[in-house]
Each structure stands twice: as structure tokens, then as C-alpha cells.
Image 1 (cartoon, rainbow, N blue to C red):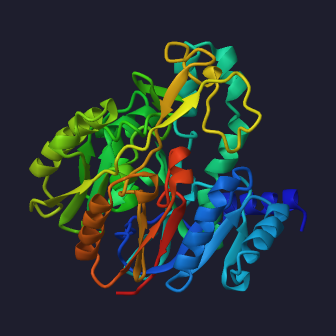
Image 2: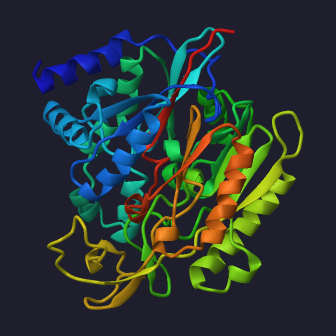
Length: 433
């Protein structure tokens, strides 16, 4: 079938054949049983591939792996490249979904279930991480420049991937006007949701909690929301940002899967900088201050039944800053960590030739839990403390007993502002009660 025709048929399904909305769906916690784990595919950034291969090989003994690709031609390429790694592609389910990109958790389906054993999807709106507002900020509200760089057709196409994933699994769609990404959803499966003000208000300017909370509660099936203030300093909004002094980086602007996660319905893990490490560099100091504020919020928070949480501090890896150069031309843009001055806001831009310190969005909190296994990033290869990583291992062994703990070097994803959790999306098992 030709690609345009397939795309047209899928849109027809979405517009005319979707099931009516229901309200008895909810998002299970990530540690509950999964029918599958989805990944996206990216052929543009080849540095991602070694991480993807390790993830697939680790996941396949435990859960069905599904991979979304944008086109038939990319499907053939993905199958060939994956099979060259001695991976049995016949055991992987591939789906062609126009608009699909690598970071499938953020733009893909946030799967739900209900007591009837039906699958649902929370279909949030999508604006490429608030990209239009970032461009307005960058170009000082020069709308001609905004129109030059913002591609609404591409954004719309990406924003339909979650709907296509719903169609693929015959799931009910619960649509909402709220703009949100999957990496910013953290639930305990019992009725409590953690959000971050920095990202929610950025994606939905002019909206307040009173307007937003009913929609989050409706489409995610929660009744209790805890609001964090800010995420990690090394996860700034968009590319590229001068975080502080000569430290630069890029990211989402505060996704919860970088700094705060439920370990069980009553326990929350929070990224942490020890007192003795907070003055080692400006990034540590910023993270210490931000997480200290979030800790106070969590200590005062209550779950859906009015009970307090147990809070566990998970150390952040030692900062992996790398010296780079600001260059006008980047011939090796796919692999280089150097940056172009024009990629910054004018007020934050370096001069050509300036030496900078680029930081990845590195965090042990960007992990994935699925059937029988936890995928954790490792940072000892970049000089982070072996003792610290062993402490992290023990925390995860205690919090997820009976699961294998597998460390994977995901630094190429961190340089791009994400991690393994951002690269995946769990599809919960549907069980009739």
C-alpha cells in the first residue's frame, strides 16, 4: 500500500471509527505487568544505535518489543540494521506510523487500562516541547523568524502518533486540549500523579492549576496531584542554553523522569546532591537547591488516601562536563558535541571560538522498569564514582526486588537531552477484574 494512502486511511479511522470516550480508565504504575515495551527508531543520529541494540537485547527475554518507524523504507532499514546485531527481528513487532520519531514516550501513547480489561490512551496535545514559545523567546517575538523555524505540519504529524498507536492496539482514546509529554507523567497507579510546574506551565501558557488539574485527572484516572517546582539544571528547556557561567546544555526543561519517580505506591525516589558535593561546581549547587525545594514539597505531600510518602534520595552521577568549542560551521554535526552560536538565544550565545563546558542530561532516574528487569544508566565509564553507582544498585535492588538490574551506557541519549526511559513506552497488560 502506498504511504499517502495508508496515512489517509489511518486518519479516517481516527476521525470516524474511534470508540467513544470513557472515564473509567487509569494509568497503571510502571512496575505493574506489561504486554509490551515500545521503542522509536532514529536513523539520523547513529550514535543512538548502540544504546538501542543493548536495550532491545535486554528487553526481549522479558517482554514483547514493539518498534515504531515513520515509513516503509525506514522499516526496511531498521530491520536490516537490527538483524545485523544478531537480533531476531521476527520476534519484534514493527509498525509504520507517519510522524514517528525516536523519543516515543514523549509524543507516543500514554496507555491506560480499566477494570473490564480494555486498553485506553491518554491523547495529549503536542507542540514539540513548547517549541513555538521557545522561538518567540529566542527571537524576541519576531514572528517572521518563528514562522521560519517552526514547522506546524511536522508538529501535527508527530502529534498524531499517539492516536495511531491507539488504533494499532484497538484502544479507546481519551483526548484533551492539555499539551503534555509522556516523560513528564509519573503515577503510582493508585490515584496520585506527580507533575512539574516548569514544564506544564511552559507548554500551556496562560493556564493555571485550576484549569489544568481536572483534565489531568480525567484522562489519567487520578484524583491527587503533587506539583514539583523545577527539574534538574542540566535538563534546561530546548537547545542550546547557557545554564550558568560557561556550562551549556539542552533538554526538556524539567521532565519528571529525570528527577522524581515512584518506586511503589507509597515510596518516592528523588534525585539528590549530597551536602559535601553541592559546591563542587555550579550545576551541583543549582540541583542541590532545586531538589531541596522539591524535597520539602514531597515531605508535606500526601497520597490519595491522605498518607505520607517515604522519600528516598538517589544520588546524581558525578558531573560529566566536556570541553567543547562554539563553531559557526559543524561539518560533523551528527557526532560532534560542539555547538553553533546561532543555536542559542542572543543573550546567552557564545562567540565563535569560545570554549564551553557542555553537560549531558545525566541521571539515574531515567530508568525503565518492566517485567522482571530494570534498565539503569551507568556513568562509571565517564568517571563517576563506582561507590556511588553501587549505592544506586542497592537502592534499586531494595525497591524492585526480584527484578534483574541491568546497567547500560546511555550517554549518547543524555547528550541529546534524554535517556532510556524517554526512548521507551510501556504498554500495560490488560486484566479483567
